[in-house]
Image 1 (cartoon, rainbow, N blue to C red):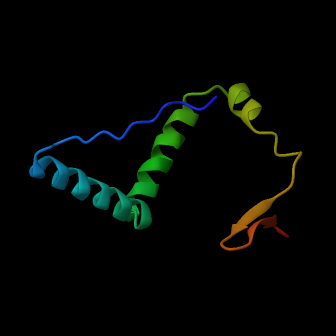
Image 2: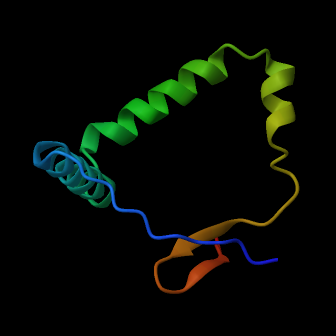
Length: 83
């Protein structure tokens, strides 16, 4: 079933459009070049959360005795980690 599609023109103030463009550009830059402290804060958040779990809960999240060690190689994808 094909929906009916109509072209709609919306008029917006220039400053609103420019603000949106700047925000998208800033987001794009931050995703491509994250601040070095971002990873540190992310890990602190995870570590803090993980410490709130009981030992049994933490061990139940990941079973290290099964599975296969892998690593990401840009342009190649996930490959087995020989370590």
